[in-house]
Image (cartoon, rainbow, N blue to C red; front, side):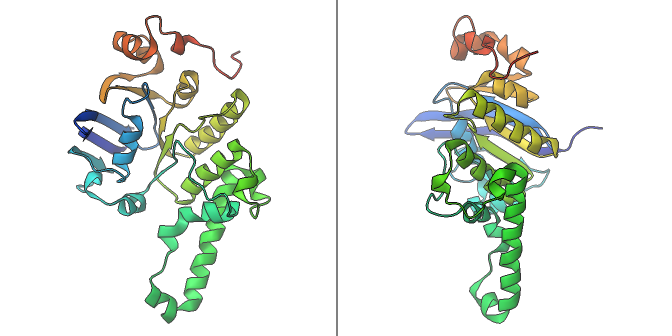
Length: 272
């Protein structure tokens, strides 16, 4: 049975000062699929995420969501979020002076926030909704990082770098998205931490979540994604399985170097 088409991007284009960050990019993602996005620095990967999630306005193109007529590219970021998209960032965006649970609870904000008049009219309902939101945030934290859920009152600033990444991942999961966008989730991590975060992401994917993931660690993204798209100077130059992409002449020439050494390096995880 064919998977439901969740996201359909056509001719996506964005320029900054005359430079094409995205140049007529086409991509599609099925429900429950993991798609890897790779490419050299400056190839347009993070701009792609920013445009999809409404943080940056596209110059042209469409992004159809879940077969609906509505175009994501015409919606503000908060409406995109409410439709069921959540993301993490290349540079961690957490409030270090707040607790783990407070940070994760932000992922439930748009689902549980209440207008001022409703707070005055129904204070009891507002209290129950806020409490439910924190319980759901704690549930997301338990799923992603059970050891952090044991002490949700710890300040984020006291955590290791890898655990801060897990808090950001839990915050995105707290929104209960249908599509999770991960921008270099293992950036700055050592091999052990990279493998552990990979296990966390695979657990999320096993639950049926659709995932778009940007990464530079080739074996890592290959272990997660069934399909990989390659960007270079804003254009999609290749797409397919890891084996297909690693042998593509354009990829080897423009991204990996003549011998494609980056794709042939061994994984952080020991291969049997």
